[in-house]
Image: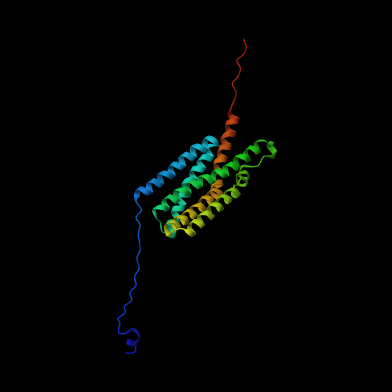
Amino acid sequence: DANDTVFYGADISVTSGSETLYQEIYFSHVWRAVAAVGLFAVLSLVYVALRYKLAMGIVVAANTVLSAALTSAILLLTRIPVAPSAIYAIAVASLLGGIFTVFYFNKVRTALKAENDKKAEEMTDTATLVINASAHKEIGVFAVCLGVALVLMGAIATTAVRWFAIVSLIGLVVAAATAIFYAPALYLPLQVAANKAQLKYAKGYVGAKKKDEE
């Protein structure tokens, strides 16, 4: 046989196979992440409500939870491999959502102080003020710097760390989007309701009358 002169009568067999490694995510990791997100939400609500206003605290707490929820939804819909480290990346996304929203409310508070110094006929309506007070520059700079760091970390690290960087990058984008787009949309009706309540209280308040002198 002509082939025997090449392989010298050796029997050659070729096999192929694939292996899929599944890493179990324990329930304790999940509930700890959920507890961390809940703790972030409560602390942000109390802190922002005391330092700024209750309506702002509600929005910050809502964005804290929303950032974690949207990041989790994206991971499930896109079927990105999720390791235990990704659970902590989701918790970090929750924290970033609260921080970015505080950036936005710093701008809103500055705008509100400027409005108080204006005359009544020069004051801006609430919707315009809430929209124009966007902190997209501050949030963008912070997000880009952190995003570059995550990309570099994923490029030079192991596979496990690379997936953690990818999940963190998704969470970073979600947190920035919620602070830029969702926070004003949620805050506007709350601020309008607060303005109406304040105006109603101001009109309905009557000072104490002096007693007639005898």
